[in-house]
Length: 56
Image (cartoon, rainbow, N blue to C red; front, side, top):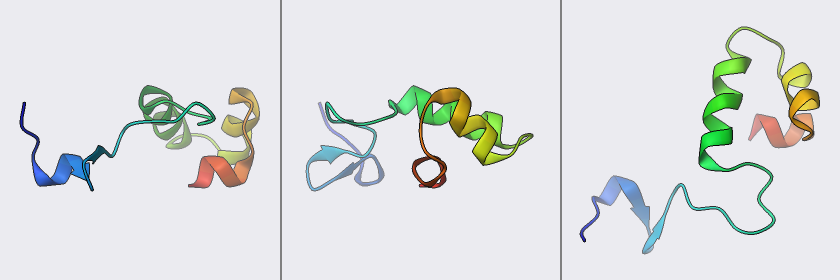
């Protein structure tokens, strides 16, 4: 299995998450979609994360 340079950094996938990660890659996609039409703070509250985390 090979990976392209844009899909990995230092041998790790850019979309991998650790056990304490507040969002999975799929969760981040949903967050972005929701924030296109609604305030970040409202979406973050619904998901149960801080506004600062949602802004990352």
